[in-house]
Image (cartoon, one colour):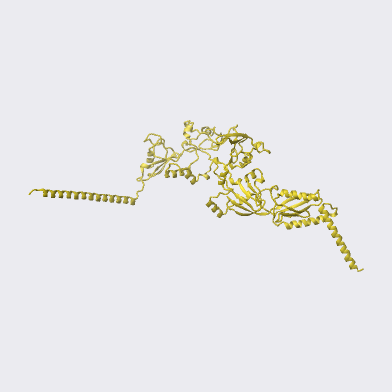
Length: 614
C-alpha cells in the first residue's frame, strides 16, 4: 500500500470524525445538555455571536431620547435592533433585527411575529420559547437601537410637516420639535395668528399660569386606525407613560388650536400658597395630586393640612362647597385624599396662621445718630419708633426732604409698556396733553411712601407716623440751607434760605428781574415732589397768600415768549386788507344810497314841473 494514500485516507477519517463530533456538540449546546470539557465549543459560539452582533450594530448607536423607555408601552417594529442573552449552562448573546415583515428571526428557536406587540410581550414570547427547549435557561431581551419612523405633525404648530424621528420619542417631543421655528415659519405664524402649542397663554386671572389646551389634547391616529389622546401634563406629573405614548410608523399627530377648547370649556385651577398658581384644561380622571404637582408644590408658609377643594354645587354656578384635605395624604402612596376632581373644580392652599411675629428689617440712612439696619415687626412698628432706635435726628437733618422708599414687586426693568399705558388711558376723559403727561409721570414715578416727616416726628401726626414694611429704606435728608434762583434774574445762583421769606424776596436777593423776565409766570419748584407752583398762590389757603418756601426749593423766572416777526407782519397785512375791504364795501353802500336819493329827487322835480299850472 502506498504510504501517501494511507495518510490521505487517515486524514479524511479524522476530518469526518471531527465534523460528526462538532455537529453533536452544537446540538447538545443548543439543548443545554453537553458535557464537553475545555469549553472550546462555548468560545467558538460566543465568537460567532460577537461577530454577528458587530455586523448587525452600526458604528454609532447613540440616539437622542426624552424619557426612560417603558417596555409595556413601546411597540416593536421593523428596523428595531435588539439583543438577546440566554443564560444557562452556556451563556449566549445574540443580536436580533426586526425585518420589514415585522418578523424577528431567533437562531435555533424560530421566528416571532411582533406586529402589534409591545417590548414586554416580545420578551415574554422569547422567554417561553427558550424555556420550552430547556427549563433551566433564562432569556433577557433589550432594545439596543430603535428604528426610525415617519410621522406627520399638523395643526397648531410652527412648522407642520413630515418628520423622521426615533420610535422611542414621545408625542409631546415630536410636537416640540415641530414648534422649533425658523425665520420663515415665524413670519407665517404671525401672519396667520397661529399660537404654537407649547407656548402657554398669559391671560389667566390673578396672575395664574395658563397651561395651553393643546398640551393635554394632542390627537394621534395610528396606521391601524386606532386613535389616542396624548396628555403630556399627566404623563410628566403622574408618571403615566401611556398618557404620552411613543410614536409609531405613519402616525398622524394633530395639535388642536386654542379656540377648539371652547367645545370643552371645563377648567381646573389651583392658587394660594403654591409655587406656581395655574389654570389648566380639565380631563376626566384628573386628581388633586396632578394640580399640586403642576403648581410645583407648596411654598414654605403653606398649611399642608388646609388644602381646600372648591366645587360648584348649584346649576347656575352661584354656590360652592369647600372640602378640606391634607397635602401629605394626597401625595402619599395610595393617596387617601387624592380624590378625582369634577370639571370646574378649584383648589386653594391656605397659608399658615402666623403664630409668631412677622419679622423684617428696614434701613435707616442719612442724618440720624446711628445709621444702619434695624429689625421691625412688619405692620406694627412705626416710623417714629425706628428713628428713636437710630439715636434720633442730628442737627443737620432736614425733615421736609426726608422720605421712605418702599420695595416694589415690579422692578425698574419691567415698567409698563407704551401699549399698556395707551390701553389704560383708552376710555378716560383726558385730553391728549393729559395722556402724554400721564405717560411721563408713570415712567418717572418714585416708589416712596406718602408721609410728612415733619408732621410725624414734630407734630405727632398718627396719619404720617406710618407703619413700616420689610425692606423699607428711611432716608433722613441733610439740610441744603439754600434756595436756587435761576432763569431771567441778574445774579442767578444759590441764596441762603431764610424762614418766612417770599419768592419775591429771593428774586431780589438774586439781583432782581432781568429786563426780559416774564414776572407773571414765575414758578417755585418744590424739592420734595418736583411740583411747579405759582408763588403767589398757596394751595388750600386764601387767595393772594404766598406759598411757603423751604430749603432745597428752586425758583425759576422764565423769559417773555419770543415774537414771530413774519407772523406779526402777516397779521398786520391781513388787518389792513380787512379794513380796506370794509372801506370799499362802505363806499359802495353809500354810493348806492346817494344814487337812490338822486333818482328820488329827480323824480320829484319832474312831478312838480308837470303839475305846475301855466
